[in-house]
Length: 342
Image (tube, rainbow, N blue to C red; front, side, top):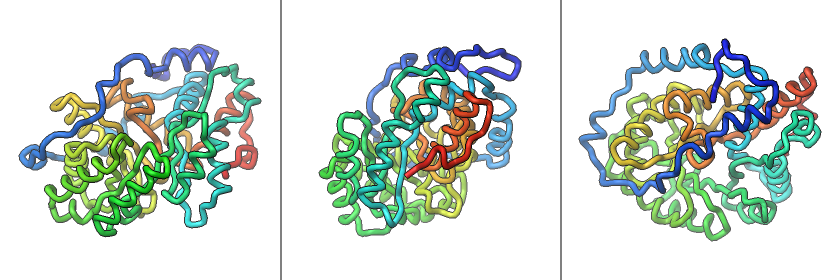
């Protein structure tokens, strides 16, 4: 569990990691099957912006992790990362390097120095559909799934048929998870039936692959729109709702996150299904990862602090976490070039 400033943490990071482990506390209730579109429920969504901002401002003061507990939570954060490369110059070689990092996210000497002897790997590797086969080959035997962005990423404005075909192609290449992006104009115009139908069709096209639905929250205008879009996508069968593509001007923010996780809680209370959450875009510092984990624990509890219900979409974040772990071992901050990313 998280400890407050007043609590004295144990000195052993591995002991803290075991004690903080939420993976066996709550059983998985099964994949979200969605439900019929309930426009009355959607119309009742409200978002008090000032209250939401006050709530997220209190989180760093209400909860904190220090010393060995912080090390344990940073080790936990690594297992929640969707390690991502979505650059125009992605090639087979840099995807292979990324996959090598996914298999061994922290240098062995750092882990040995911390006394950590468990297997450590990221939650998934996320790439463009054209690079899925490269990632699948590089990750063979690791049990790390490959996620692919699809459905006209990052704009979501391709023809509907092209978006569905892209999902199917990514699955044919070997992707086990699909990160689709919605057409944000449907939210801005209040076309909830069409949004529901599109996401439901994307879910059907995914088959057994898990569907993460990117809202592009920086383009949605208001937190109320964020809450409504979250709810409609869950009704349509999304396995995860995700904040951003990472390409918007404003990406993952804690007020947006709070709005979305409260929609998750409301949906579970009414339907019984647990839906996952993935913040992405602009999460580069280890402190930011801890803030997101604290938000999840405060709002949804330990059940959501596991990779089947919570992911962090990031690339450079892993380097900063590795620096913090080396600092916990040696007492000194190391240069970024000691923890290179592909």
